[in-house]
Picture 1 (tube, rainbow, N blue to C red):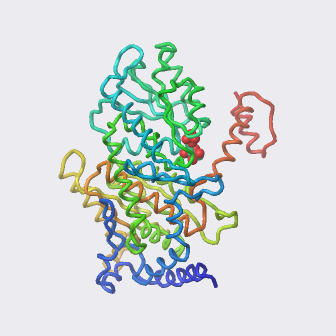
Picture 2: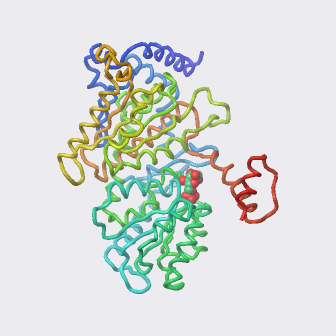
Picture 3: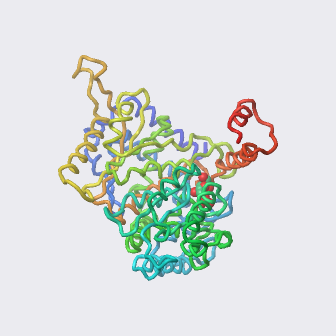
Length: 522
Ligand code: F6P
């Protein structure tokens, strides 16, 4: 048996034993458990002691990481080797957040000077807009940005704005991702075109939703201000020529390279809207927090490496214990979009059924991720988490000091985060209640991630933690975490169906699809 097969077999044996015992029982058996499984990394504290693994199981998982070649894969990633084989690209988002003066290479090509030049251009643009040096075509200063983009060109900026936005921002930032015209209509409502920048973000600059919304927003500007308002157009793209052809002034097109994956792109010029609306300083601090996590991931030994251990805990649940769903519950309203962000990061990266070389995978891959802010989720899906027939591991994220508001309410929020993790693990045994309806089996795992404050550095570190965790899982499963071929078929079919809805010739479809097209034809 190969090392890797033996390591997977050992996981199965370990998990069979884990199924038969209680997590809370492990604290007595392992006096060092809490210390051993509480990690500090880049300003985050991560408690993995409520996961179902014993000390021996953790060692088994570390053996699996070694057998799968996590250390060598990490080296290749940081060296800028072509880790995204199906698209022939490195994945070098770490280069975007490295301090000035670094020397990152993408497949051998130096990239750091270009990264620094883009950051300098972003800073200059953000400063000019915020100071009023750059104004709209009527001379008014900009008071709003409409950020148009979808998927990786939307979820990161939206998360960061929600997490860090001031209560009364100098510049309001709104988003439109969906091709549903309602979203852009809502985003534009109440804005003065003379004071509004439209920032279109698309790596490819071919995405149907984004181009549709960008055209509508351009028409909205021109309807009031004429073509002079094209100076309100800004674009961020890895295809700058296409952005130029759309009418965006050349000095307002910000580029990034194809070695930045869409869902890893918030660190690039994709973050421009946030850099303008929050001020460049906040964006630089976000980068610094992520860079600190990069350094931790790159240098910490596997056994003390936060992204590695978080990945191993998740894989122990996913593969060992056969748990295909994970919940993510940030006890911070400002992080309510974190689960949506992780859905793309984890499910687009690792929702794969063949290996990087095209063979069927030997093990189940990404878990489905869902979640919402705590305490809201407690009044929605926590019933199932506590008493449902499936065991769904939970990642809880909590923030010690709230950003604003009543400190007593913040304490209540933290009490709920702690209590839910306790209730999930300890439960309430039937002996304590004669009523089966009121019994809680417990033994349900959670991770507890604690941030002292929700500041840009910690937010950057939190996102980078999950990026690297996702990468490690991909290595364990032998898949390419950086492509996304599974999104293509639906896009192609939508174009075909659109032609038919608009009156084009009927195509060949299954009977259900044909009926829907007939019913919704314009
Ligand atoms: O959903 C597929 C996808 O390609 C994502 O990977 C990407 O983040 C999103 O579409 C948007 O793509 P683009 O930035 O090229 O418009």
